[in-house]
Image 1: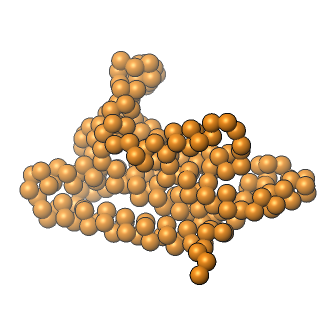
Image 2: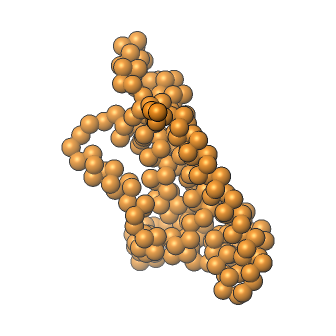
Image 3: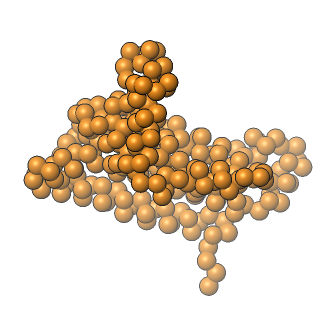
Length: 224
């Protein structure tokens, strides 16, 4: 086991979840309740990481963060370090490629809430923010928890984007997925198998929890 790689992956997943979940709630609520022209284009843009090859997304992120880009030059001038091939760059990339996993479960859960509930809260004098915190989130908590589980697990197993943006620097950007690849390349089947089994267990548990919570979102149970 490469514990440094595992710890770095857990740190990356933790930072991604801490930043992305609140942003995902706001985006999901906006998409679930707003009606505007071009909404489907916004939803398509947010869902793009689901269908775009990770290496393609990683390439564009690398270009955007590289030393010749405006963002890359600004970050280097401000911090003295590069954004690409750094843990900070990995976190930024992780926020982008995990957007659909954080937004879609919450959006579906909020959409399943009866609109009359929201209207009644507004009629009682609650602000939109109070309605979200006191009414909608308690009702949509399975979707929120499902989004958290999916985001965390997907970050742990991501390979293509992490390799493109972060490289494979031990202790800095070498995640468990990259460690598995390196172990397999060096024919260390034992270490690769143990780390792969760890991710397999996490992935299976993620799917099970996601489906279990999805069945508890109001209005999503199948009728028999």
